[in-house]
Length: 413
Image (cartoon, rainbow, N blue to C red; front, side):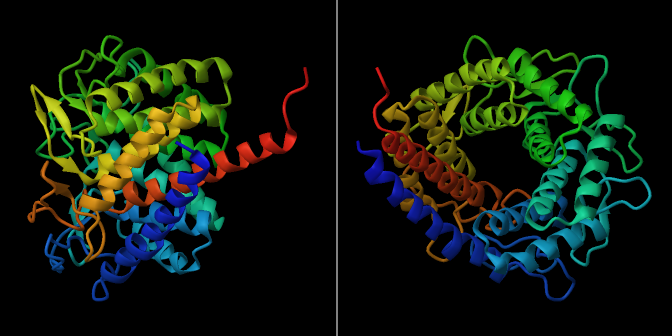
């Protein structure tokens, strides 16, 4: 396989998908022109539910997506959309009394669910940090820093490490900490901690504060020593308060997503010994995902929970594309590049919807599930838009690096 032949083609296809399908869908179909902000739901038949609640997670992820596209591509059409998402987040989703962001508003933008889940605070922080990177708006940075300090003051578990998961509006810990009915009601989750790490990584890139650095280092250590299972190389998903694993589920999408997000965090910290430990763990996760999670058709299975769930959800395909490209960058092993190309071919064939956006889930034979939303609290452009942006960026970096090496000529004896 000749990378110089396949990677430029992949980059063109990713840019086309992002700028001709993903971004236009969200910009053109999701604006709530009656009540402001963005609609809360569009069903699998592309019908807008005008009375659907509006999720803080969806709004924060829209803020991240439009901001990232503005910054990376100079897509000026994204600026008013990023501004709209930021105005909504810092306006109706922001708690002016207790700080932090609410979980859910009703369709008119009135408070519906005041829970302060740390997962939700992390995505708000992530979106605000990316918005500051794109626009330089100081109020976005101030609110991102305020979220970091709030998380550390109220949610950091000083006895056992990590973070308490969920709180009431006035920051009293909740008994039921589930993100959704599908999740286990356990005291700590991998998912929340992964997205806190993701958000802290982006914030540290624009605000290299010593306290933030210390907490980001602690999160990396937590993943290396507790969350990644040393026997299998998979992530544990749920834990009790003192980090005893409470689940045997394997999530292939989370494994491959973590493999590149952990390395991104290590890179922003710039610590070579830590990075080498992270790299070893990340590449093991990538290899295990390649060996166990990739179907013959190139799609990534959803999870293994006793038996194998052979459905193909949209977001693991996006994360597999980035994770396998990342592993190829790290190793030069063409098996990883081939896996990334297979995932992308499957995605184009079975996940992309000709009517716009991506199907939420398809069966193993490629048949879409019609009940899966196109827009909803958990269906957003963050994973697939990010996969396109990350893929393009990584291909550019690889091509520039190889061109520079070729221009330098062979090493001197």
